[in-house]
Image (tube, helix red, strand yellow):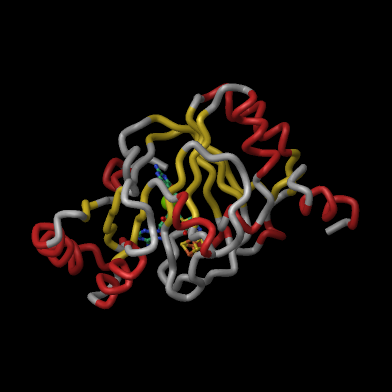
Length: 209
Ligand SMILES: C[S@@+](CC[C@H](N)C(=O)[O-])C[C@H]1O[C@@H](n2cnc3c(N)ncnc32)[C@H](O)[C@@H]1O
Ligand SMILES: Nc1nc2[nH]cc(C(=O)O)c2c(=O)[nH]1
Ligand code: SF4
Ligand SMILES: [Mg+2]
């Protein structure tokens, strides 16, 4: 990457944009709500079951002016979900300021593995064992969305739930490739531990992005 572009990316004035699309939020608390998704490239957390591995290498995604991302997003929706990749790889200050100045609600999907930047109306924290969230994000998470791949993930989810606020909404979401195996385990767990709710990737059932 050119040095001048690298500097702009480091300042959050440009971001490696992988894709953007208007769809229905499929997961978690806001599922069913129309929203514009902005997917920023770059992630080195390395979840083996990640459903967007094409996002990992930031260099494959064109550095795009943050102002241009904002101008476009607000044409589609007043709810903008920023995801990735891991959006907190980058400084989210200017992106969220731009969106909020134009009246949009800012939502983030994050593993919390890097320091929290940006001004968010909704934070979905989805912690990963391989690279735990930074301490600063736990009290600010609005929802905690733990992915269940096998039964050890219930214990991990409970450990994570101890660290969020009492208002944070708690979700267990099946890892897609093992959904048939883990959905019955999640259903049983939630009935026995009703502070948790089930989250499904409903967009995959609806065949939408
Ligand atoms: C692709 S990630 C991008 C945002 C951020 N890196 C994160 O992990 O939160 C978006 C959401 O999808 C979830 N996710 C990724 N792959 C999944 C899979 N195979 N099955 C279920 N959920 C998955 C993540 O845990 C996260 O909540
Ligand atoms: N419809 C839809 N809802 C989503 N919720 C979180 C997603 C993500 O990849 O971050 C996602 C996604 O990719 N599509
Ligand atoms: S943190 Fe998110 S984007 Fe990164 S590998 Fe894990 S699920 Fe994929
Ligand atoms: Mg997704």
